[in-house]
Image (cartoon, rainbow, N blue to C red; front, side, top):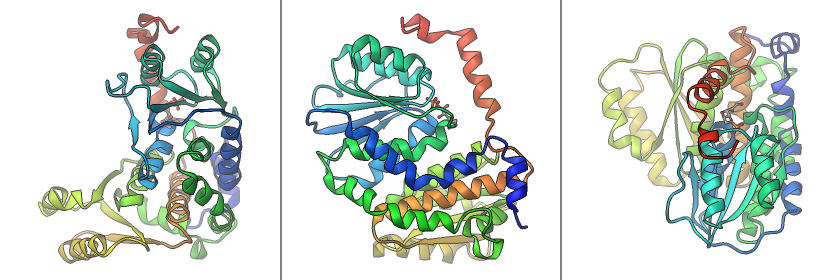
Length: 349
Ligand code: F6R
């Protein structure tokens, strides 16, 4: 089914798709924001965040192998994180308790810290402790601020891993052109995001990726969760060949849709595993293969993220659902605050 620009305007009331359309500009903006931050050298990176504020860390971890990159989604900071690490705490709202708890541990350990937020308690902690802050522009949903966060992380790595920041910069023009092909005025037959949304609607998508597409598979899953309010799952090659395929061969296929993310640069090992997967399940479960081409691994990864992001909003529109509100998340945060008020317990608020 077609999704018209009018339908997008009527249903996407807060204009999340409009924010996605600025993907390349926001990446550039993130790169510029972190240029203003002065940091010393470091040997490893840990990104602390949750949900939409953590995923940029996963993308960096998939694309950077020159130094260790970890993503910490928890209240606790691993005990091995110390002086040689750069810790980047990201919370769009600035009020996420897991992130603030890990950040407060890092402050006590005197780690080298940079924060990214649009305000909240994180901003106050930065003022109180004199921490460097990358200010995120207000008015975004955290998950829609992903390109700014990623650009800023790339900028922070420009001393230690200059190749990465450069490659992100080099991909901007290509991303702009790709995003053009996903916009609402481009008709269904020529719009890969609308086509994907139509394939996923009414199904339970299971998204598979490998290497640089691991974080993309997870991002696609969570964007379908939050924007389209759909259940979705993901797994990664080669690990899924050691467990998930046995579960799939148990024969419960109803309603499933497998999406395989294929980077044109996958090595033979992964390509052959995808072939084996198709050999096993071709006649049993519908499989959609999405091939990503581009000038670099960074460009292909970011194109794939754009595709999933746009498709998740189109899926929401096709379901007649406003993509922006995430009531279950808001309820849970409120419940935790009322029952536990953990941040007050640990002396942060
Ligand atoms: C909402 C979203 C969520 C939040 C998460 C953490 O758009 O994507 O996954 O990112 O609940 O909140 P913040 O980002 O404010 O730390």
